[in-house]
Image (tube, rainbow, N blue to C red; front, side, top):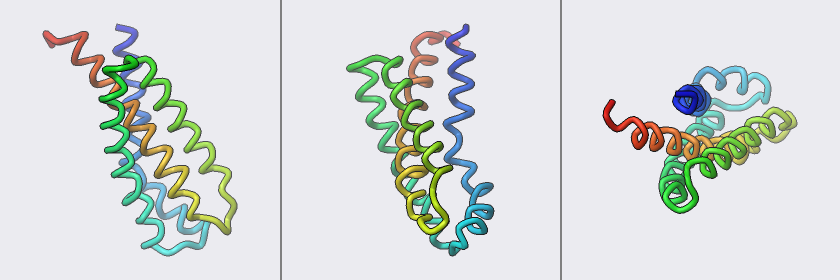
Length: 124
């Protein structure tokens, strides 16, 4: 049950993709950015997340859930940390760090936790 509790915590963090709308206005203010430029961040993040889920499924069968979860967690965390270091004049780096790395890593981690829960608790 510790693995299930850990998986729930991971799911809370990989939901970062869905809270971009909360981050968007402060990001627009901080970078003095346009709404369309900031909205593009989510438009990049969503397909990166789908690619992460797809790659996570393939890797999960080959390398195991632990490897996929750790890789996804590291990518997502690195993307978020690097996003916090972006200078004011380069908001486009959010596309690479927050949307690219964070989205792909979140997709990897999402897939690993869901597949474990489905395999280990099949009767529920």
